[in-house]
Structure formats: structure tokens, C-alpha cells
Length: 462
Image (cartoon, rainbow, N blue to C red; front, side, top):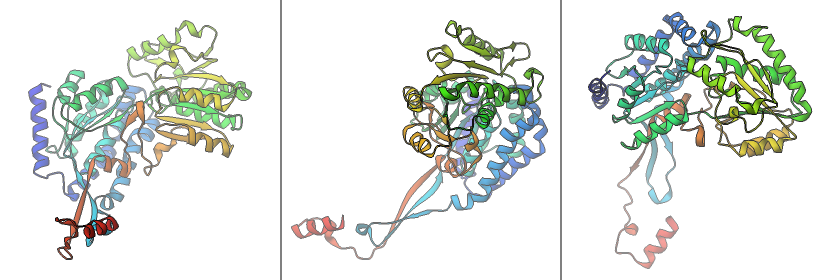
């Protein structure tokens, strides 16, 4: 797509917003219901596209993408009439008689950059929030997941108002052309390096951004955990979507007294879930592209791992298969511990105690998520107090995503801004303060000329 065509699309969206096409509540509800119909009527098409891009099973495609979005829409439709209402707040004595409120209003034209690892969910979930808030939207699916991108580009215009919602496909050059345009808000999901580019480009227009990034989300396993259940839940969270999840467990810090038991249970859970040969399992996904296969293989070729015990690691580059892999006794300075792995490799690091584990986490950038497994309530309280992260989950992995009442977002290097449910609505709205005052009691204490008596009265009022 040419730069001129992109400029025309963005200009049209601004015109539609200026004409208030997207502002009426009935319009918002109709668009959300139309998206609901799209996902339902073409569920098999989207499922097939997800299988083509990422090897997702039909069940995984439904639970993590299609069904997730349908629940998001259902929750939004249930609550949107409440969200759009003004929110009354108190008014201090000095303002009386008066009323004060916060009135949600749409921002304008929102640019949404989708991600390739959950290419349907992470593209359309921000669109749901943007539409609910009354915005016009320009959607850029990830070109790294081409089948899903093509499906979104084909079906979204058939169901949504194209004067207010437009899909733009393309590569990094197209993304750069979009970033040169003026938007009211930019929503980006992806890696930190591209996130920095988005933020720099947004600064030219003083455009606010929501950055949903990632980082190395740690797991801490206490000796007071149920080790068998812990292993199953770690394996489920880590190897779902072949590890290509921004909140997947990235590495495990386990107390020495239960280290051997945990590794044994991890391997048992892998066999239980995916069989002796995961490449033959219908439930194990594929890496999105060959270059990512090569990146992951490079992590295992690190000389620092020569004394580590690597379980798995088999690769079939032609079919984009990378085996579920556990690295036991992983050195803390190995390459696999430098950046977010974003693949099916799970390093295990033994620690003497929990304070050592927490010190290790605190020495690194704030993660998007952290998982702590322990039955001990005092250990849970201490972990909640000391760990800074986007989301903290005890005794499971990733399940907080199922609660639309909880916000999702990072802190520090793992991102800024948050969404899901009302959090997404508020993120893509301006909560405009509105004050109404009466003409009654227009006393002159605030007006010049000031006297000692007026000053005394003002101090009491303020």
C-alpha cells in the first residue's frame, strides 16, 4: 500500500470521527454485535488460519483466540451502558453550590498494531475497546502471521462500518508510513525494540501510546508447593502456543529441596500432555517462522550450557517444529537468560531459598507477569509485597487473563497502559472533568481587593 493511500485512509477516519459517526452508543453496540457475528460465522476460517500460521489446534484456537474475543465482546455489551455514563465525584466546600463529574468521551482515531503470536486476539481485543469507547480505528495486523492477517482484512470490512474502521495490511515499511500519520492514540503489542520505535514516532505528534510488551516472566517454586500440580500448570502455561506467549513462564527458580522432584514432574507432564513424540501431537503448536526456529536453536548452542542437562531440543526446520525443551541447572549468565525466550525452552535455576529467588528477580527488569507456587500464606504475602510486575499469580500460570474485571498491562520495561473490560474502555477514552456551578451565593471573598478578613475566610474554605 502506498503512502498516499495510507494518508487517504487516515484522513477519512478523521473526517468520520469529526462527523461523530462513531460516537452514538447504538453505533458502538451494533459494531460489537457485528464483530461477534463475524467471529461466529467464520470461526472455522479463523481457526484454519491460526493452524496455518502457528499450528494451533482447534481447541487452542477457540480457547485462546476466538472464544476469548467472544467473551470480551459479551462482557463489553453487558456493561457498556454503565461505562459511558458520567461518573459523579464530590465537590469541595469552596466550590459550592456545584456538581462535578467525569464524562467519558472518545479520543478520536486509534491506531492498533496487532501481534503475531495471538494474531486474532491481540489484534481485535484492542479494537473492541476502541469501538466501545466511540473511536474510529485503523487496524494493522501482523504480517508475520499472514493467514490471519488476510482473514481479518477480508472479513472485518464486511461486518464493520468501513467509514470508521479500516484494515491496513503490510510490512515494516507500511507500519512506518502509518506511524508518520497523526493519530489520537497508538496501541502496540509486541517486542520492546519495536515498542521504542513506536514511542519515538508517536512523540512527533505528542500522541499517547499503550505498549503491551513482555519480558522474562519468572516462576518461583517453594518447597511448600504441591509439586505435581505445579509442574502441570507450568508446562501448560509454558508450552501453550509453543511458548510464543508474552506472559508464558520464561524461567523457573526452584528451592533446592524440591528441585529434583520438580524436574521429574515437568518431564512427566510433558509426556502426559504431548506424548513421547510431541511432533506427532495435534495439541502442540509450531513456531511462526523459520528465522525464529534459528533464533531458538542458537540459544541452545550456547557453550555456557555444556554442563546443563537439556531435555528435548529436537528441531524440524521444514515443518517449523521445535520440541518442548527443559534446561536443568541452567547458568544464570547463559544467553537464554538474557532476553525473553518467546519459544518452548524452559530454563530451571536452583536456589537455596526464596529470598535468593526474589533478589534474582529484583536484579532484572520488571516482568509482565510473575508466578509464585506456594501453600504458605506468609510466603504469598511477602511475594506480593516485594515483587514488581505487571500481574502476579499464585499457584497457576496465565489464568488472570480469564478475568475481564482485571486489567492487563506491564510496568517499566514490560509496557505501559492497560486494557481488558472497563480498563480498555477507560484507556481509550478521555475522562473529561465537567463542573456545573450555580449563580447563587456569588460572595466576593475570592475577588480583589483582598483584605485580612477575606484572607482568613479563604484559608478556612480552602
